[in-house]
Image (cartoon, rainbow, N blue to C red):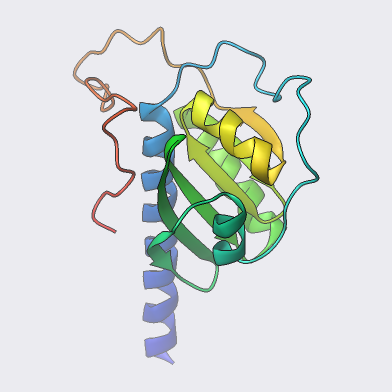
Amino acid sequence: MRTSTNKGARRTARAALTVLTLALAAACGAGDDGDGRGGDDKAPKTATGTLEQLAEKAECKPNIQTDADELRQANCTTGDGKYVLATFATDRGQREWINTANDYGGSYLVGRKWVVVGDAEVVTAVRSRLGGTVETGADHSGHTGGSGDSHSGHTGSGHSGNHGS
């Protein structure tokens, strides 16, 4: 049936756009000089649950941006700063998303079927409530900022993570 194919294509396109949005949000806050593994500090057992349950544990009132079967995304602003919280329907979908997003740099707090994207300091603070493992994407700090660099001029402090979603 043609309608289901179009619907599937729209979902795929929406998911791809969301991946790019989250990756750009992470890239704007990139700059972690550590190994990206979260250090030796004590973190709680990794949280599980729905986007709303995770947001509550993270002390965030979620501003839902994407509400699809395979991906749910919310912007959060807390005393720690701004970040994006995303949940995934499958572990495989999450890993594929992370693998793609890592190319854009940034810091990611990763739990089972969820990820937090934000500045390294914010991710570390949220980790104290949600647990998880910190991953750091590719370091693009050596870029020259030429015309092909779509991230020049971005700063983590004013970035909302909302690109027309």
